[in-house]
Image (cartoon, rainbow, N blue to C red; front, side):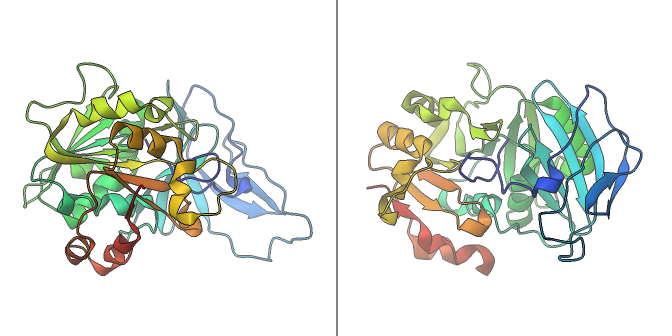
Length: 321
């Protein structure tokens, strides 16, 4: 399951401190409304603790904060799972970092974050099934099937409890019903690194890799051999698109070579010399590095196949060199 990055490579932007103070037990928490009172976040009658003082010198009325409530909070064998509900969206938080791993917008589809990049993937891969390794709450699947309603998506997730929660609260079950155009999300529970899992006989047209744990990219993704093995699951001319998280925490003057700060992209370049492209998301979108295997696509043709919201960022892709 993915996340959006800052220096610690989380899946998505870190939540404000006031949202990070949950106390987990092995049982499910009751639903509870959350309101702001006297500079603290208070959580109904739930055992969940969300208390956080206002920043020094600030009063509760200095800024308008979105109202939200906890719709579920549960601990699985892999994650501490919290889903928050706001007027505009539902937000999935995972692990002790409380980073945002998925968003389910109630009206507008686009997230202005790395999940939107995944929706640009189908025009540059062959026809055929596309896998998502690290399905999480299904944000990428929602966007891809919205834009490309005939896609066959194969979503892999290791945490079955997370999938159950996403089906109930994040609209995931709707994607498992074949659309009128033939598109569908098939969900698989398992470890994508196990020898017998996550492969199909004719190969995938593309694989989206969005695998994080405790706010960091899985260490396997910093090893060239891992990428060679994952690439072997593709059909001819298939590609990988990867959420690589953030770069190393140090200065780098040449922005054209800043990809060298990211361990996953360095491993990809060792596995596929001269066959990796990259872009970096802007600060307001989490500063994640996104990588793509294969030669740099024709950017004009790629952009022409996409709606304006997605096409405008295509020119930022460049080869690693």
